[in-house]
Length: 339
Image 1: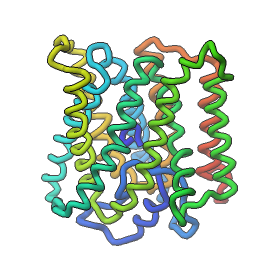
Image 2 (image 1 turned 180 degrees about the horizontal axis):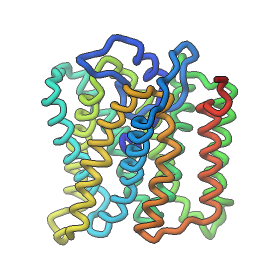
Image 3 (image 1 turned 45 degrees about the horizontal axis):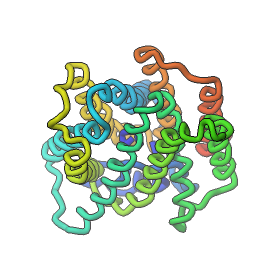
């Protein structure tokens, strides 16, 4: 989520910044992969009206659709080349938006070094891990496991920061959420140990998203669309030599029309447009309401996978996603909040 995937990963900084003066007409988080936890002194989110709900559902479809597009494109393209196509095309779209908004481009080397780290943590590592995992597991299961990102972000923020410590409620939510992961994995055995590697790769991707959520706080005063463009640019540059050395794309067969359309959807809809919509929702409805997309992404991905890809879920996966959802609901506190 970012997109993809978003993503949905809201840290308390987002809400804190929403009360500060706007920067060049852009309000919202200064980091694209944020996670859970609201500061008690922060103002409440704005009410969710019909347009906000429509935007939120649309965002969940865009981010859930990234798993769907990946499944289609993997028929013709290897993982590294597919991810390179995603971030490079998204980079062009995002820089076009930056130029349209006339946003000043920083020249400070520290900024570019920072977005390079973010590009690795928020794009390169998780995108490659998730896409590779989908060569072994279904898009639905990958989306379910990716929903653990807020759990990892809370743990990392608790360890790495002084202001984002776990409360009792959040700790219980994290434990419930990881209990759902245990249900999904089942009891390990020598017969299925190799089968744990692909889902484990998705969890490692979620951990990387969590690291990005904490690291990205340093971009608090940077227009978020600029940070997004910088991240995808950096990850494109890092992926190019890897794709050339490992995939040797010039030896690949010409992609089919379906693959080309899936790549375009992957890059323009599930990445570039999803980033833009993310910030629009944040400005309209607030960070707390935006956290709801975490619950909706697996639903969108599962519906797309089952309806169009013929995927099926084991009963333990269905129970597991329900347990993860309960954990996220406890973390959010929405169900127990006084009105």
